[in-house]
Length: 329
Image (tube, rainbow, N blue to C red; front, top):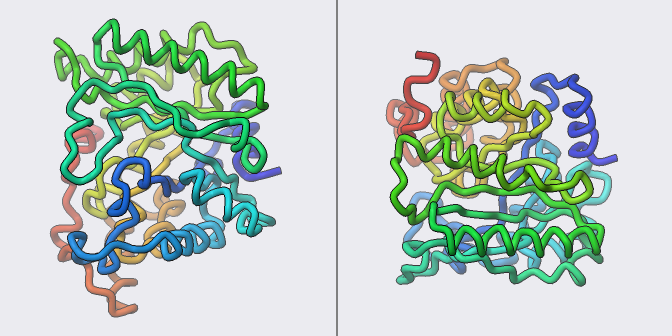
């Protein structure tokens, strides 16, 4: 049994402890950024040449073999050959693919698609994907617009029918509105919570998502959702790269607020030393290190390896993401 399934079983039994927290690496930037999504060859200059697909696949292999992650999410075009290669064999890591790619993540250079209300779209064909992988991420974005949101839930219903037919499991990503219509920013986190519960209310167990992936919209909103339905396994997404302190604070604050999963992409992919960053995730989650202590430890490792940090320690210790500020006050 993969570690993901073991941990989900433990969580469902009400026996969760921080050691059961689920970690996933979101190595699927191809769907959003295209060529530049893989990250620059020089981590200090993201405007320079970007890593090739073979190099990017090696970074996936490295993370999988580190055995800190429970799930490795990637593009179909990358996960399929890695599964065939046997990369996931005997690792305990579950491979997963992005099952749909809505227009709000279409972010090629020079484009403006993301400024318009999200529209559902699905490139992946489950008939073919299910032959090498049985787990995928399906994302939805609601904007408080009836026509667009109706199309979103209709597409999700069709996907669930297809997934059940192909015995394909999924987890559900719910983004914050990308082009909200008449929605008060202060109410937005609770609008998202309400839409999650509204959408899942009519979903039978056989087609229900294994867990959620959503932005951390602050302690109050996360605790509301986690306490409202304890059976709902909530995962937080990483968002922008941010500071190293942001990364560790998100893990710590998210877990303490009721999240049981973290799915980070750019925070790992664009780090100076991804493997060393990931190695500190579980100590932070399990409160063996505070976020501040983890930042200092990470910088000490960079210095030891003679890797130049993108920020001075003082700057990297700062919390820059609004949802993380004032925690506990």
